[in-house]
Length: 179
Image (cartoon, rainbow, N blue to C red; front, side, top):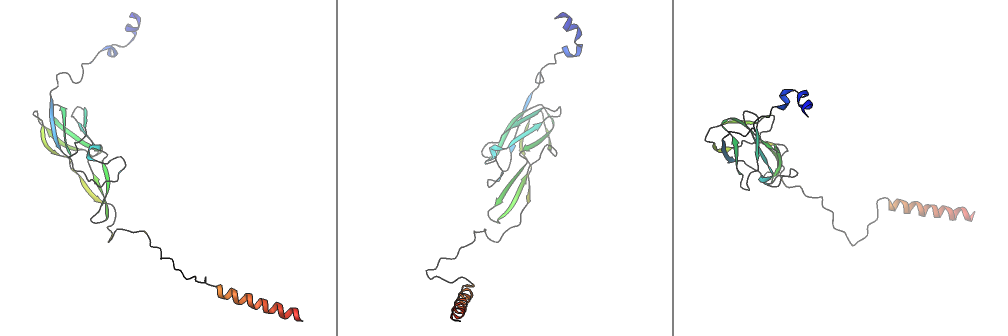
């Protein structure tokens, strides 16, 4: 064991203090908007969203909003934090306009930045952007209608011509037979 300890480089033997040592956590609370008519798979309520907060030193903290869209999370100290949401895009149908839309939240590639003070932050509203993705329709589409069945049988197109040709063939056969 002693030989192993001597062979291993010294930097591998250093044990760093836990990253949470001597860190004062501060509260961050706010709201996030949510469209209840979403049809994005796996997202049925605002609680299905996950909000991430990344500290200036790269520590990530996450939380899920409550049913009313409010959230709170404790982050490690003050600084300029980046916030993003997963999933970052939700598709939904606006039943009033019959058009499809997409709600876009900040994502990891384009997060929302804000300063968190040493006492925390309250009233943070995660920004959203709504983009129309489909054209509005005048009315809700309905399935095609099938005409009602009628009790009177109707001949198919061309039936008369086939009957005439069959009768003509029968007359010709009789005439040819008499000769």
